[in-house]
Length: 455
Figure 1 (cartoon, rainbow, N blue to C red):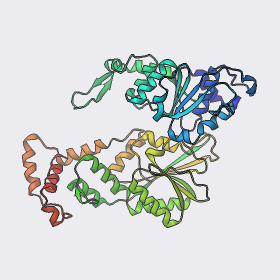
Figure 2 (tube, rainbow, N blue to C red):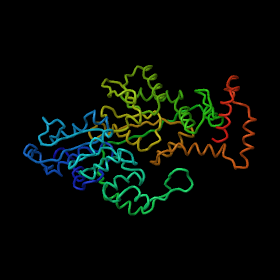
Figure 3 (cartoon, rainbow, N blue to C red):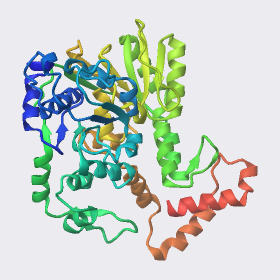
Figure 4 (tube, rainbow, N blue to C red):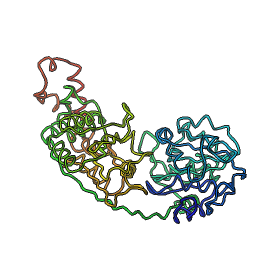
């Protein structure tokens, strides 16, 4: 194999073309494959191990748009080493420029022409500033896109289809393929038309890497108890026991249901038992209150830990026994760790895509472990059960579905019975958790009635 590329990477390079999407699982070596394609397109013999003799080759300027974390950790520089490429002109043997920057700065490069762009991680979804800049860059440059999860719906492919010239703009795609729902107050896709054509177009641009892992993943769901009475009272009374106020909307109800499911003593005890069994573990979590619980547990049992979240950007510890606390949104992609074989999901994330990306942090080509262990803590609360069902089916969980179910089950009535329901609510005794002062507050009482009536 030339330049340290595996056979499946060389096969992918043969199938790649301008405007393609290189699709490979997390840890499959997409970055190095993309660099191999860039070198091949610029005339380099990627099957040769003699690089210095090719230093006279004229190569296009290379721009890599990636995540901020991957840029700062210099992962791309490590992948460039076998090709003798570097953003530092004193190290690079070719006469060209290499720029590595984050998606946040993509606007800076929309006027660049006649260069080669590698877009790392799928960020061209929707119609925002990043997509507009991407489309302008794609018109005047050669480019490829790397992604482990290229798209969940056909709408996610619209920017890539436009950049490849399959459609003039988003309106043309919508008119040809989308049927909008007639029963909503906002644009909602009811179904897609012409899916056979869409499949053909997607197959034209997707290049799959035929990658077989040497690792074996072991998944285990750890059942945890939760406060059933408190969870039930949330749904029935719509009262926030933590802030002592009414629950005003479905989003707050969803948040509180998850909180009650995630803060139980039994869940914390199960986590401690896992940390005792595994000296090194990465722990993923969702909310700040979970972070406070994790900090308290690790301090109590004397385990050293560092964090990666919106508050701190710390690296993986290097001691004998440690825990690395990672918030899902902040750290589910663009980094890796081969020092441990264990990931603990303290709470479930509603996105299967995020969960899969997070799982790939330890499942890398160069990991020394063959067996990898994933522990997902979940309760039997209704929200955890439904979320687990969605994830098991490789789908995203929509919190609105659960809220809508409760609304229909407890409070949805025909129009001619709304007045009767309002009278019933007004005649009900106020929650026992209310203080006398709260009961006298007309605003809080009215808010409580409205949430009971409409939610």
